[in-house]
Length: 130
Image 1 (cartoon, rainbow, N blue to C red):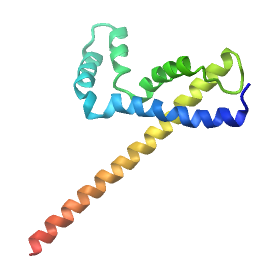
Image 2 (cartoon, helix red, strand yellow; image 1 turned 60 degrees about the vertical axis):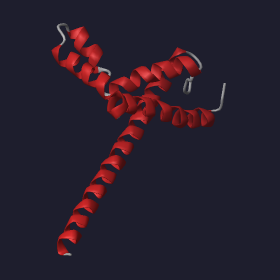
Image 3 (tube, rainbow, N blue to C red; image 1 turned 180 degrees about the vertical axis):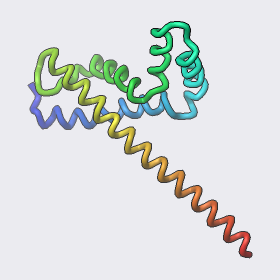
Image 4 (cartoon, rainbow, N blue to C red; image 1 turned 30 degrees about the horizontal axis):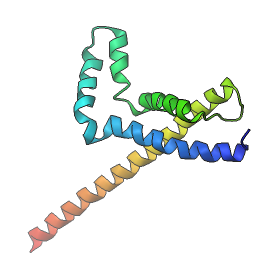
């Protein structure tokens, strides 16, 4: 059994690629067309299962659960316990930390966008004064 300290370090490190993948698929321009298709299918699907399936590709929180399952399978990461319970604890912990990372990233991006907008406004005002 690895030490609890190492498990915690792995928790914070493994959450980084989970957050990165979940954010990229659900927010970034590179996946815009597939995401728009999924949004359309999640709103206009004929069955509840179809709508929920396509919705998971549009929600970073939902999608992070599936990315986490993949990472648990690839890494065999578990937290606190060496059996199946450790995988469940580790899985939900990874989802939570990944979503904290995505929330922080979203706030940082929002702040950067706000600053860029303010700079453009100041530049326009300066040009008008000249």
